[in-house]
Length: 521
Image (cartoon, rainbow, N blue to C red; front, side, top):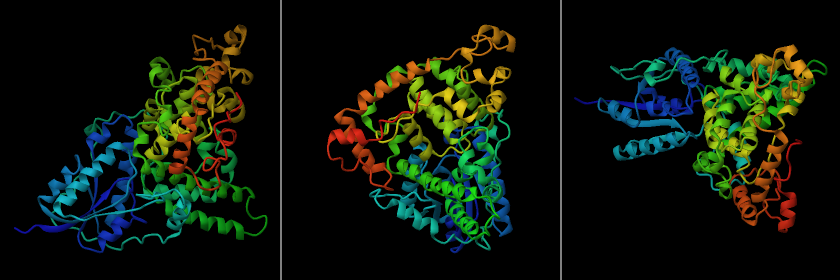
């Protein structure tokens, strides 16, 4: 009996219907199956979490409703790839595979190679389409910003009015979390997935929440409300970067044309800041696309061995559990465990503290944070963890003072008291460094250091100085300077002339380079 012909649209990090070129292209060429595959081996990886699963399921439920409105259906399978394709191919004649390009982790990279081999062996064309500013097989970073701009201003892919589906197809069902070995989540107040929620979040940011963005993004007290909160929707593709960018441009035009005094003046700066961060989003993803190995190894290999042999498991556990004795560190980690999101500055602080104060290698800390970031985007995540750990060779080294972060971003302790309740009654003046409280005040407020809250796991100034000396000992070598040039050519931003390109002499290079600025301890 002749098998019916069908095309696959393979969903990965693109859980939406609008601006979805694979769906649009497939619909023009006959019966189409829009398929999402839950891969058990992927879900068994340490960076995957129940919160990711729930968000994806919510997004797929929303997408399923949208597909049904135009005559389509969502197909779901649990299994590995390409085995799932092989199984379906035994009953249907697969004429084409459509998907977006993905810049994922090492597992998805290897899986895509297996899928590519399967498709080639059977003569099935696999059409992969860009969905953001990441350029596959990029030859040079020169001109990348122009390529990004060109993509963002291109026309949004239309939404099909109708989808033809094959007869007698087993559409499957969304699995239960336990089928993939995922435990019940203890997290609360998480963002809900789906294209509908993505659009509502973008609209609320551009029209109401966003005017505080520039100032509010740095503090964990205000960032939860003032940041765009689009990151999980972009990470899992509930909305496209192009759609966000074009709606931002329209809003900027609206602000410029508004009558004087009719809009808060902060809107202009806020929207400009947000625009720059959209480009940085893809800039960091491009790094992993160009060098997949950076998920596992130092971008600048001269730093191999810097921390690997000194890993302290006890310090790692204290950092993970939010019991380092530094209130801002502990509050951020506990908040992250509860709601799977923390603002960027606090993320940078968590990584820097682990890498520099605790002298932990970035890879284990990156995996732990990935598990708890609802918006885990491998390209951004691993690049940023290396950047904050000082192993890129081209970025400023920032060693944050945890006490200063309290003074600057949570002076009344509202955030810290919420997530570290044992410090609830500690006076504001001692909250940055509770271990400096006199014993009589400790007794008075019911917070005895070493009993109710730990002493600092390391001494800040000593840890700061030690990290600075160890990093500088490498960064000022000729090998490090030479390698930083190589890294910059491959990964550096081209927005302005950088001294890493053509320093006149080594002494000038050292003076101009980005490694001579540390945050005030």
